Each structure stands twice: as structure tokens, then as C-alpha cells.
Length: 358
Image (cartoon, rainbow, N blue to C red; front, side, top):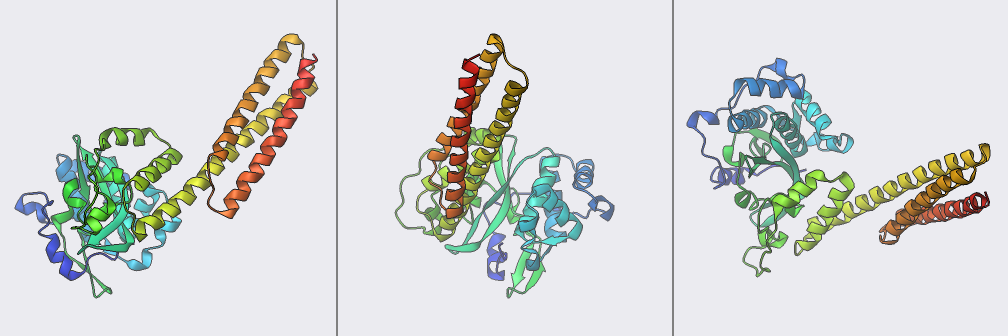
């Protein structure tokens, strides 16, 4: 996870053109009583009761979090063991420390409880045209149809000599417009640039170099589709968008490989679930045939169920055939599943012969 900004960069952050123009007294960090730190719902309830309007509520959350949470690099592996955003957010709330993943998860979880359409955004930071290859996380929100970004990690301070964390509330990364945020925060998924003409990765990494003309991207429709998709479909869509987004630097190339492996593993597990369901249905079907001889009409019903199971197995096999699995373990797993499927299809064929004789 990101080690935050160096002191020299912090001064630049205050000049960020994307910073929101808030009243002067709004830049004072909000102090929330400790008794509201027991749960995410309690924290959201306090903010909702004491601040009017979405912007004021999000500033209360941002300024409290940026000023009160302690950036602690020793906690950078916590998110590897706690993958659910709400669980990670609650851990962060109670511990009062973490890295960017913790800051982002807490902001995301509470913002959603405040009724804000919020998204966790993962990517990398670009400083002085250099990619920081340890990754970063922040939050994107759509407020009254308009997209904005929030980075409470960079809003909280900086690392001094890569050793000591210095708290210094910074409003520059509160409610930032997409065209400004992308200058320093590049999402791995181009969807979360929230731009009609998203930037290619190397446009930000290598300014001044000739790049292809950006293509129009209807991010609003794509986001609506994303919200309807399950995890597997979301991951497949993300991979497709990343591969279309121009030159991939080392960080993005590594992420594509990692996400591709995750996608293949999830896809194989999905097909295993489909196969196991077919096995369960087939066993019950065989038990019905063995325990209760079917007359002509019942045989037709059972034959239709056999045909439906066969159709499901064939569709499963077609999915596996379309994927060029990238690891030996996944290749072997897919091959074994194909063999098991063929064995079950053979069993179903024998069952059909039995039913057709009745």
C-alpha cells in the first residue's frame, strides 16, 4: 500500500485545482465523541444527526478520519486477511490505524450508510510523472448525478523520511473532480476514472508523448451495468476495459496477470458448482427411477429432466473450452472437471435408454 506523500509533495497538494471551495471554518477537523466509535452505523448516525447535507456530512467524515486515524505501515497486511470492506472498515474504526486500504474502506462504508453512492477505487499514484508501484486506494462517489473523488489518506498527512507519520489536515483531496484526480490517482479500472474520454495509462505516466486519441466511453451506462453484475462478471468486465486502455506499465501488467488468475479461478469454481448441482440432480433422478418404476407419462417427465441436466453440462463444458487457463493447477482442474462431466453424460445416456424402454 502507498506510503503517502513526501513532505515536498504535500505543499503541492494544497494547490490542487480539484479542491472544493469550502467555508474557511470548514477546514477545522471534526471531533466525534468516542462513544460513536462502537460501530459503523453509530458513526454514520452521529454524522447524519449533526451535519446537514451530503457535502457537510462527507466533510465531517473526511476531516475526522484524516485527522484522527494514524497511518501505520506495519498494518499494511491487515487487508489481506480481512477482505470484506465493512469488516475492514470496522477493524479500522476500532483500531484507529492502518494504511490507505483502511482509510478508504472506512470512508466507503460510512458514506454508503449516509446514503451516498460510493465505490472503492484501487489503482496507483503518479507523482512527478513517476508511477508509485506499491498501489493505492481511494473512494469515488456519485452525488446528485455528478462524480467526485475522496482520498482521506492523502488528506491526513505525510511520511517524514519514510519513518514518522506527520498529521496535517489537507482539504485538497476532498470532493475532487475526475479530470483533476486522474492527474495523480490512476484507477486500475478505467471505468472509475468517471470520464467520458478516459485517459490511457501512459497519458498520465508519460505526458508529452504522442498518444492515441481517446475514445468516448459512456461511463454512466457502464456503471449501471457494473452495479447489476455479480463479482465474476464485474471482474471480467474490468479485465476487458484494462486491456483496451492502451500501454500497460509494469504495475498494470502485473495487476492484469493477478486479476486474470483470480478470474479463471472464480470461473472454474463457478463451473464446479454447476457440475456438483448436476450430480445432485442426477443422483436424485436415478433414485426416483430405481425406487419407483415410471409409467409412460412419468418417463417423459424424467426424460425432460435428463435433457435439461445434459444441456447444463454441455454449457458448462463450452465455458471451459473458451478459457485458456494460465496456470498448471487451473489447467488440471479444468481437465478433471471435463472428464467428470463426460462420465456423468455417459451415465445420463444409460438412464435415457432405460426410460425410453418404459
